[in-house]
Image (cartoon, rainbow, N blue to C red; front, side, top):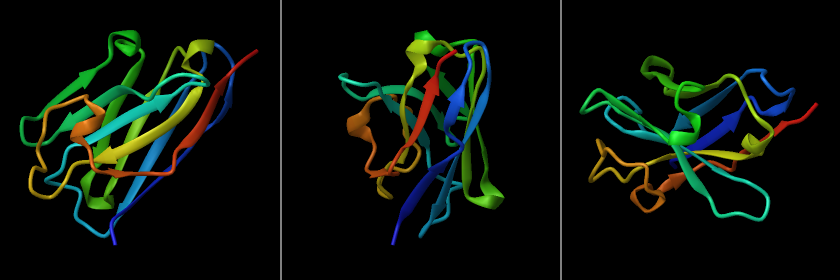
Length: 127
């Protein structure tokens, strides 16, 4: 069974940092892209960042460029999202996601291009 489990969320002050983890099981992460998304209260889920191993490329939403960094440890089947210089508007539930096995190395920030999803982890940015 394919599973993705996020962790590392919590309360952080404006300007502070958190690192989220996405532990995967049921498949080998190495050939797959991984995406990070978030849903703020009362808003639709939006793409934050993705990493494509096939193209060795990363993509970030304009709102997080220079603040967030996506990475992975394939030997641990785990993805990461380092979040620096956080703002209150970054408060949201953050999700990690992976595509279907038929198209593992996608380059996309679109929610519809991802198939497997974690349950989400809450990040609250407040003083």
